[in-house]
Length: 235
Image 1 (cartoon, helix red, strand yellow):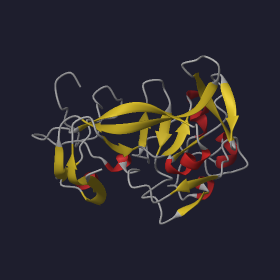
Image 2: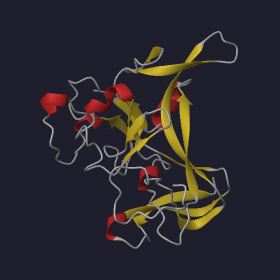
Image 3: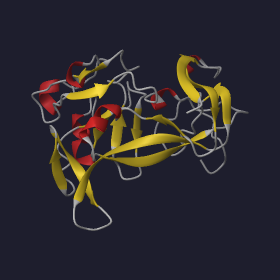
């Protein structure tokens, strides 16, 4: 592809920045830079996210698509070292105020979201959740783009770093593997293809050996962190 991704201490000068995402090499405008990995929650299953309803209180790796689909990258972390069964139901999570037996939990495989999928944990692009918001005087170089992975070939499934929580019953669904997925019609309108709703980061300009920065657009949020600076007045 002409570039690789690396996670290392961010260049953003505030203590909450932590690790950042860096691109080594060159990527052209319009290139897919990274996938946003993790557990995909349709709106009907928000209540199963740890800490509900304040799901973002101890989790900075949550992101929402325009259609309300939420992705929690926290269980994915930095991935792994091999293709393996990703038992995300037992991944460590921070403490939360809700008891698992009260609201459910994405840690408990006995609840509605329990899944086991063979995924490529070494996925070289599954690091979008490490992209930081630019500080004052800096500008984003990627944007969020919603993408529905069509699951046409089982051999490709391990390279999609997401699993779906629940059965996707809010839309027409089709069984695929151990979970249900939204479907879309092919051009010939004769068949339906299962898809997995995700997000990717796309380069908004040419990027060369630099940190990947994403506009978080938090200005309309109820709780804005002290380090947040809007990229422009419309944010």
